[in-house]
Image (tube, helix red, strand yellow):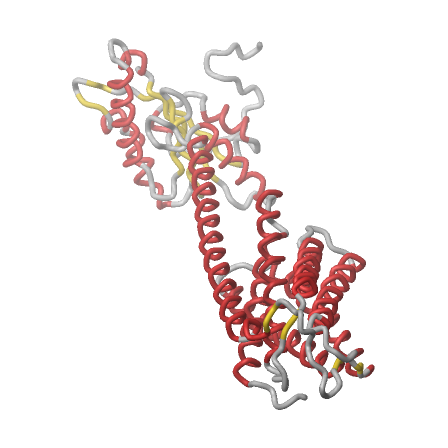
Length: 428
């Protein structure tokens, strides 16, 4: 009754198994991080593609073993065998896609998937409804079940491992894993066919509604095309989702940056300065990163603003901030602290690289402004850790007015225990 296997059909069955395994890995790897709506979509697609792929591989594999009589199948039993494969795949993917997965759940998922494969395989063979009952080889039967369990466990373990991977290398790992899984699936199928055989002369039931001619190459081609199209569409969808996530991340970053950026000048704002100070102080446990804060306030700001509209005043402020930026060393963090005031955070402030900057700042009244628009500056400075070891103390110390000629002179600076803000009563 049996003859040699049809090699093209064996190859076709393996290709279907590879695509089915790849689909399982692809969808399973995305379930764990998917939201509820997305998760249902991935789960349904994964169960249908994986279950249909394994089911198709089985029937193509059966056609690879030619019989002396035309092969046919009972429609209802064939449909139930497909539902068993899809349902088992869905249950397994649902369990393996959980964020937390212990050994009991992993074992449950493995047994669920293996049971679906075994039921699908043997029910699919029974669907031929042969005129004589089949005979079983107990050894091959147990081996086929063991292969189903091991293959299912390996598939789900790979799904779980791939859930934590990302990048271009993930696709290559998935493909290699799919080849291994496909080999295991085919191994279970062909071992199962050796475990269940029909006597010589047995023929399929005459009233079987599904002709075997459609269960070979036509079914394989249809399933491969379906899996390929589904995977291509899914890959495009994943790329689209990633593009949306990247766009959202960029927007969030832009919004976050706006919260730390002065809208008029584009310089870091008060919040950005305070955050930068906190970051430095938090990591500088041994005070090995000294810095200075230089306070520069436009003393005649109200005068300049008188009679100006918002747009004109903003233009003047931008011009002043750009000129001020030109006076600074490259390493200096310049921030606009208020409408009229700026802070310059100078790292390693006593280094000679800043000497020319200090010289320029001492002449800032002459360097910034025009005869028609003179700018008068009020300045102060503080040095960490000499004049304070907290953001509040350093800012307050820097805002104490000093002569412009004192900018950059830190030798005699020390913390003032009675420090008060300008305009406040010292004893209040």
